[in-house]
Amino acid sequence: MGIGALLALGSYNKFHHNCHRDALVVCTINTFTSFFSATVIFSILGYMAHSKGVEVGDVVKSGPGLAFLVYPEVVLTLAPSPLWAGLFFVMLLTLGIDSQFAGTEALMTGLVDNWPDKLRPHRKKFTLAMTIFMRLLGLPMITRGGIYVFQLMDFYAASGLSLVWCVFFQTVAICWVFGAKKYYNLIEHMVGYRVGYYWYVCWVFLAPAFMVFLFSFYFVKYVPISMGDYRYPAWGEAMGFMISLSSMLWVPGYAIYFVMTSKGSWREVLRLGITPVIKPRPEAVLAEIKYNAMRAADLKDVELNLLEKTDPESLESPSDEAEESEEERREEQVSLAEEPEAPPAYGTINLAP
Image (cartoon, rainbow, N blue to C red):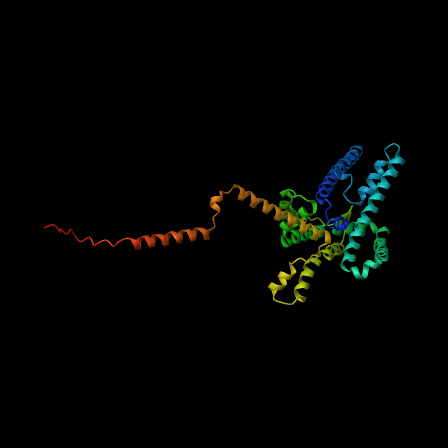
């Protein structure tokens, strides 16, 4: 998600594609793969530690040495070793190519969608040029000292704090600025049913809190980068932080640029900055119309049910009741006017002789 591969590939789906099902499948496969890989890795490390008579932590450190040094050594002990060696490196090749396809597509999709008029007609040529450019950037990593450059890039760029930083602001922008309820309703429009409320809690509370914890834990448990017994110099560590900041500074940098270049008061600029600019696809517009029609039909059915359960005599309008009360008041006044006026009751007068 943070690299953007899933977002780029998901943008090619149809509007009513069941993204909820895909999310469950992807999360399940990733979790199972992690558990399976951990079982295989620690089984191999335990075997090597037992054969060498050392602790598991002393066999090898995490990093590229685990895949390119430890695994080939273990594969040689399996029979037939040429078969397992071939399968292992074919797996590494397909894994690398697949990652490059996804990462390149994420970059191309973002750039082409941002400048569609200029880049979309020349998408193939632009993709070829960017592929050659990225290949040139990767050439230093296959030199004699390339493993140190690779470790520096992997530690500070690919799997470091910059990725957590970007994903955190993506979550905040979608769930807190755009609105988690809107996002929740949009998914209902797409898949045709309301997903569990668990997802809403994860988007709004659990995911941001977990990322803040990871970001803080990174600095609390930070250990300077090393490669075996080699300790990177201070300038190498500073270069690593600069690599991380090259991705992180774009978030506050663009916010400052937007505030400085937009016209109006700071409240107007802030309101404009947090207002999403969405260009819905025709499928989305039709889905919105259909959803509103269904909601209107549901409300109409509820009103009809209420009318059926209500006593017809209680449905008299207030105007009818007012007219009846006014007519009764007039009749009472007329009857009072026709009655003879009674003498004042000051006492009893005896008219008999």
